[in-house]
Length: 219
Image (tube, rainbow, N blue to C red; front, side):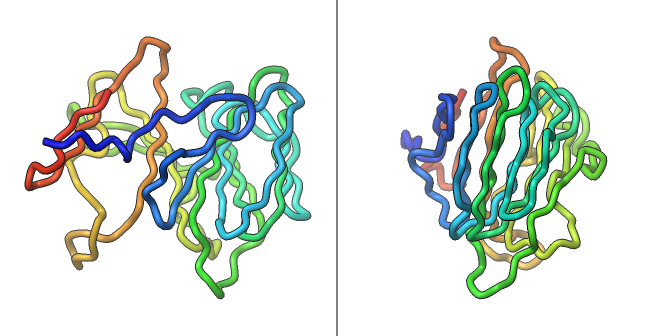
């Protein structure tokens, strides 16, 4: 048994942008914006395309010449469907908190495909976010498809939210996306950002390989 922990870390929740310290992915990255009232963050998407998902609070998002004012309708991620904004590669953007309390925004990033055109910035409204249920019994969970099936020519990003009831398993049955095996497995990097609906809440995640070289449980 090994004690590899490089795939799991507690992301910071300081004011401003909180990033991943040790990112093993080649294509994906993730950032968490924590903004106080009237605080703003400016950046550039550079070599990434970004979907900014408003987890809680309200904000105005400017991406290039596009401006989406005072969007966000839920106080937290457990209270309804989100607003989200697609930010194409090589685009200056700014997120400005407009609510009275804290605003939390997830920046979901995927490396752009060289030489391919990307769509212009666009807004995903809550009514455009499909929802449903996966699984059954003690591995049933609900989902929000924030950016899954779209007519927009995004490069790589697939973004969603999954809500797992107390005592249930998520992403079950166990599976992986590490190689291309037609009809069985597809290569796909994944980032998971976990939140609990209560301060005392907790979860368990098992990470293992068939040969047992990795066999760990994380809280």
